Image (cartoon, rainbow, N blue to C red):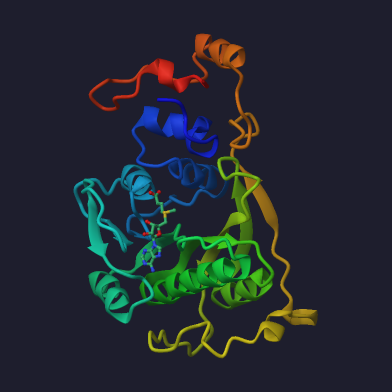
Length: 283
Ligand code: SAM
């Protein structure tokens, strides 16, 4: 069968198949970790909006949680089981799901909360950005209940019109906030990742699930922050510059040359991944 679209079968898609990752998104988390050492000292992590599970795979492999249940993964959709990953099927914007996650961490806070959540895109940019912001804030709300002081929070953001408001809200809770764009995230996408380190809520802050951080009285003018309230966070690209460019097509001769040098793909075990090495070459 011919390829259906450039997007679905770019080099990261192929590498993900080859390496047994459930989605190409795995490379985003791996490249974020390369830049920010997200997994250093981490033994307990929460993966919000986790399906089909490539970030959970990365987490369970990198933090040595295999078999000991140190990763909690949550998604609306059911996910095939993964060793060392406790799964919760639910909506992260719902109180009941948040409570279920928090319950799991009672007495033992998490070191890291990640969220790669994305709403079903409508194509209406304002709506999509608003929905994405709501997901991020729901994730932040859960993080305020389960993260240990000093912990780390990483979440997908859309760099839209109101992104400075989100940065400002994140800065209330974390000593360092920046915006990162892994090489494997397409340049054509407004997607990026907020990398928030040093969880440090304001004195007297009490996590409260009943108060959404972005409520229905949302006023667009309120989001145009000026002066000291307008926080400009650093923008960082990550992933080795020699890494594959997710927006590029690799011509067949170049791919063959890379393949000969062993730089395109490693041989794979057929039972792990049914895709043949020929399939790894651009068509
Ligand atoms: N990080 C995942 C991986 O590596 O396999 C990919 C995540 S995918 C881009 C986005 C996920 O967000 C979808 O599986 C979707 O079901 C989930 N999602 C969207 N809204 C959600 C919500 N309100 N609660 C839980 N999951 C949600």
